[in-house]
Every structure is written in C-alpha cells, then in structure tokens.
Image (cartoon, rainbow, N blue to C red; front, side, top):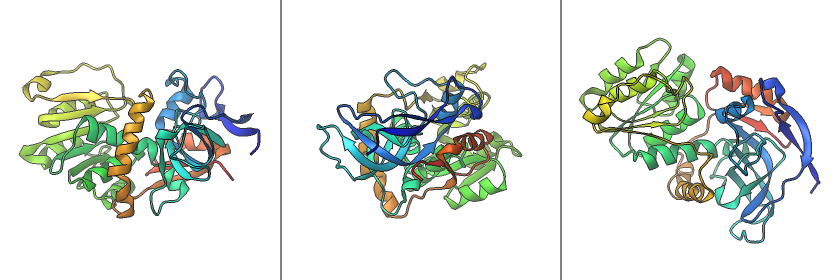
Length: 331
C-alpha cells in the first residue's frame, strides 16, 4: 500500500472551480475504524454546502468532502473483529470520501447488497441512513398511511419513495418536468406532481381526500413549510431535513395545536457514532434484504472521475439530475 493518496481539496471554499486534486498522507485507522480503498464516492448536497463554506464539518471529522463511499477494506484497528481485510463494503463516513483512501468507523460500514455494483453501493449510505432514521425512526411511517416526499427525483426523494412503498404507504411526490415524472412513476410513486407547472399543495389536498397526508419529508423549507402543515392530517408529522429556500419565515403555527401535529427534523452528520451504528444495524436487518428481493433499486444519474468533481457539483446544483451522482475514485 502506498504512503500518499490523491484527494479533492477545496481550499477556503467557493465555486466548484475551487476543488483541485492534491496529494496527502494516507489516513490511519483509529480505534474502532477501518481504512477503505475508495472505489466510488457518492456526491450529496451537503458536500456542496461544505464546499461553499456553509456547512463546516463537526469537531474531529475530516475536512475533506465526501460523506459516503464504497470500496475494499485494506487496514483496520486491532479491536475491529467483524470486518476483515479484503471485505467489500459501503460506508457512511465522517468526511473524507473524495479521496483514494478513507478511514471510517467500522460500525458505519455495511456489506454490498446482493446484486449491486460498487458504484451503486456508494450511492446508498447517506440516503438510506437519512430516510430510515427520519421517515421510519422519528416519524414512524406505517403501512396504509399517505406519505409526501418532496424532490422525488433526487437521491433522498427516490430513496424515500421506494422505502415508503416497500413498507406499504401510499406515496405522493413533487418533481420537475416530464423526465423526472416518468422516473419516479417507474419507482412506484402513486401520485406525481410537477411543482413547476402545478399548484402541488392544492392538488395533493384534492387527491389525498379526507384522510389528508400523514407524513411529509421536506428539505425545501421556506414557503413549503406552511403548505406542508396545512396538508397534514390530525396527528400528522412533518420531518424537515434541510432548508433550501430558507429557514426564517412568518408561520401560522395554529395547525400544530388544532391537529396535534409533530414538526420535527434532524441532521445526520453531527449524530454520534453510536447513533449511526444503530441506524446501520436497522438498515442491515430491515432494508438490505429488500435489495435481494428486488424491491429496491439504485438510480445513477452520472459518474464522474474524481478529477472532475467540479462537474459533479455543477450538476448537483442544477437540480437537473435524476438519481445519484457518483465519483469514480480508483481509475
């Protein structure tokens, strides 16, 4: 194994052009960690925010971009016994995924689901950890409920659609344009609305009927928040995971009281290793078997070489992708 590695450096942050290939020493696995030779790294919107300087890594995390990887374990600390050198894994990282090697807590690694390539597996951790912990953990989505996922064509959205359908919910989603509509319909979305051309809130209210919506997963924020609260049924839950259109709004909170609503949210990256380990365990038990059963699939929008990380970020910022954007690290 070599002593140095290539990685993406984003300097002091800025536009996508600030990202450059640099050389650095290999990270060394600490207690409870493994070292992964990265084959592919997933690209996520938090990477864009971090590059811009708006989402600093938590204390102790790698300053290098990249929150999920897939590859082979090439080294491990002595206390790690449930993984072996040579095992193929995908992993939720603490940062550092845009690099040839990444040190990761062993408890945040998962086996490659049956039938998936390393490229497809790299597209899983950030989305599945996020959706499972928020939609099924915090919100407790149940079979027979009406579920609305905004941005259904993106990584979080299409993951939420598939998981909600797999566990028996009726799925509503918002997307942009005919291509995205067709893509999410193939994934099983029951009701698909084009937020560019339709009044999605009015349409959802009419189509959901008297039952209304039981659970909403939203990362848009801004004016969506009031509309979401109005759509929710009694005892409904709104789960907020980002605020692309802003977190500061004038809000009528009366529906929270009159309908006994829950308005909650969370960020994945700052959670403890123990919390993430518990999510990984739940995914392995409840979700990973669904890949073998062909109930879940992976949509890859584009694969870029590591050196073209700027192009990957430009595509992410355009919101024109359908599915996941992935970096090929080992050429």
